[in-house]
Every structure is written in C-alpha cells, then in structure tokens.
Length: 395
Image (cartoon, rainbow, N blue to C red; front, side):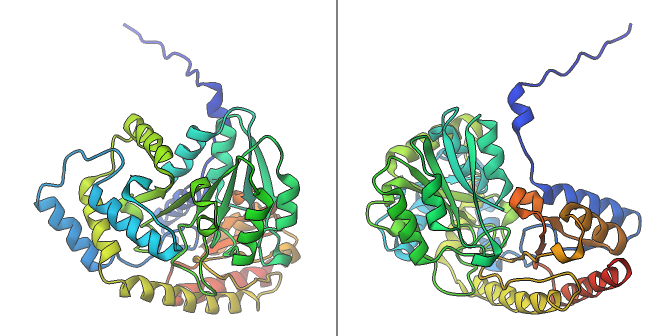
C-alpha cells in the first residue's frame, strides 16, 4: 500500500501572521554554536539573572501542596487581589480583583484585546519601531495597521501632534508602550496627558503595554489609566517575565474594566483554559514578597546600559542614544552604509555577535540595530570589541 500526502491548505489569514525575529535569530545562533562557534547572545529579550530564590521556593512549595490542577480562567483570586492592590497603589487608581485577568505570558493580552475589540477594517495605531506582535495581530485580523513613528531626534518619544493627526472615525485602538521595546524610549507624563487630550471623548480604547515599567532608569512611570476618565478606556498589559526574570514561567496579566475582563476570561476559557496554578502561587510571592532582587536587577541593567552605550559611541559608523528604560540599546547604524538586516547577519556570521535588525520591529527601524544588554559586562565588552574589529575590516 502507498500513501499520498495531501496538500496543506492553510487558511488565508495565516499569510498575514508575522513572527518575532528574536527567536529566529536565536535558532541561527544556536546552530552556529553547535558547529563550535562562540556566540555572544544580544538578540533575545530576557533577563539573564535567575528568578529570585523566594519566588522559586514558592513555586516548589505550591507543587508539593498540589497546585497542579485547573484553576479559574481569570486566575486565582489571591493573585488577582495581590495584583489589584499593587497596580492600584503604583498607578494611583482603584482596582479590584474582578478587573484583573491572569494569562500565560503577556502576548495573550495583546491577542485578546484585538479579538475582543477590533473588527475587520478598523484602524489600530501602534508604535513603529515597536514590538512586532502588535502589527502581526492587527494584520491577522484584517484590521488596518496605522504606525506612529518613533524618531531618534525625539529620543524615540512619539509626537503627540502627529498621533492626533492619525486618529480618524475608524480608529478603534491605540497601543502605547513605555519603556519601549526596542528603543528604550519612554512616554513622559506630559506626553501621556497630551495623548489623553488628543483622544478626548472619542470611543477609543488604549492598550498600555507596561511590561518594562519596573525597569526605568530616569523619571517615574505614568500610566494613561491614571488620567481622569481613562481608567475604563485602558487595558494595562504587564507581567512577571521582565521584572522578576520569569520568562519561562509564562505569567502575565491584564488590568481592565470588569465587563471587559469577563470577556477576556471567556477567551481564556476557549484558548488556554487557565494559567498554571503553581506558577500563579509563585506570582503571589513575587508581588507580595521582598522586592530587593528586582531592584538589584534594575541597577545592574542601568550599569550595563552605560557601559555598552559608551562603547557603541566609540565605534565607527555607530551612534547611540541613551535609553531611559528596559534593557535594550538601539544604535543608529546608517553611517556604516549597510542595510540593517545585512549588517545584523554579518555581525552574527563574521564575529559571532547576535543582534536584531531594526526592521524586525517595523519599517521605521531601518538604519538601526537592537542589542539586548541582558548579558554580563564581560560579554558586553567582548561584543563591543568584536563589533569594532568587524568595522575596521569592513568600513
């Protein structure tokens, strides 16, 4: 007997689905390592520190106590209460546990927001360069992706007047991200207030991606949810991956009005069922426990930022603004004369430094590279040496 393989006939929507290039570059880098190459990983956006010991122990204790079964779709009540208290305190707003939805990582909140609110043909304004999943999800749902450029001359802050000009009667959602991936730029309190004024009383929701809000080097974080009249029009996205070095735990959450939270819980029921319960128990300890380790991480990233940006600015063809948050640098490489993707590939193939092309974050990223500084000072300095070595041979 013989079998015939049938043609794979994907739904048309799959052609509109993007990707996250960091994971693709990581695969390439790992393949080079298997060939015996030494690679310095500055491509992947995750802290290189261990999860704080008290959080790990809470997770282990939860496993031993039997937290290995299904939980509520919206998340365990105790964790939602802890998050509601923390978000309410840090943003100066009143938040109840019925306004919190726990999900496995931050991305489901992006996906659920789009699925719940955005119709085909609606317009969604999003930062560019920006986290690539924003644009991917907009396109996947056949909505119209409307980029708001983040320009170097403004320290990668969005232009409020330009944002105002992009808002139309079809605008359904505006996405904000501060501190920002990939640029490390921030949205100031003045900017937030200007954005709120630009939206006015229009029926527009805001997805405020605040996943890096605890990794701020300058100023204080300010959420649009804190602006009078905007709490009910804002979905706060954040989580545990960056602040507590818990990327593999898959633990994130959204904060939103209760009626919308109920719809997100329905989406969770239909997709993930629930978030792992022992992971959530670790999350309770993360929120309520000792915060000294996250602060040490922030200080270490601050130190690394200063070292790496100073080094980049001494390399021919590179110039780099000082990022104000997160753990990325976004140097301008236009003076090298090399397109971003070609340059990133060359640095990986020729000298073993894994970075991302600015175009992995949108069209306005051309002429830039993104380096993650989630690596040791020693490795960052080695990477600088290799990049300088490459420029001396190729520029």
